Length: 256
Image (cartoon, rainbow, N blue to C red; front, top):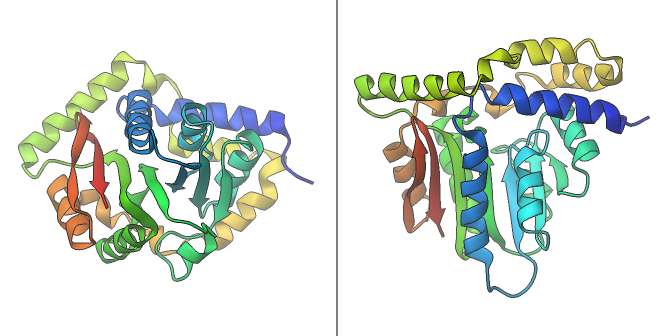
């Protein structure tokens, strides 16, 4: 028996609130990513093809689907709980794929059939170790059409430690002004999810998978924007840079 829509709606709504703690100006970051993708596909023939890397419960995919109703969106994630929430609550936004980004065969699992117009991600790729991240960037460069984009919204610390502290402060103050800390955090969200009987089997599968994946580290979280730019250029992207920033939250764009 599948997950009920009411249950999925409840947990996705709570997910959206708790994520405000972590993604500085999260809604604006989503909007910027959609702006970039829309600009890249406007005027091109056919249906745009976009992959959402580490799609979670479908937050970005759903927003892109509303902005680009004619696009084909593929969401990929390894978390069975979050994928089921996406499939139930945002069923029409994307086709969802259960795969581990960076592992052997993950791009084949996408079953794309044609070159990508864009690959997007928010607060997901930092889980990849640097060597896996570089390999993933190379694979994405191979999947994208010429002129296609990789758009990554995430937290990238400045190279200067003093500036990193200030950038973190800017983010915290922004979250405080928006009362983001009034809601539950990551750990309390998962603790609450564990008490929902509808999610028991999915949580058991999540525990079974935990630690099996290459995404089990947070190694790339410490990589700066220049470090990502170097990896992206080595991977085959010709134009790389930041198009939006608030504190240490950035949107980095790389053009194939």
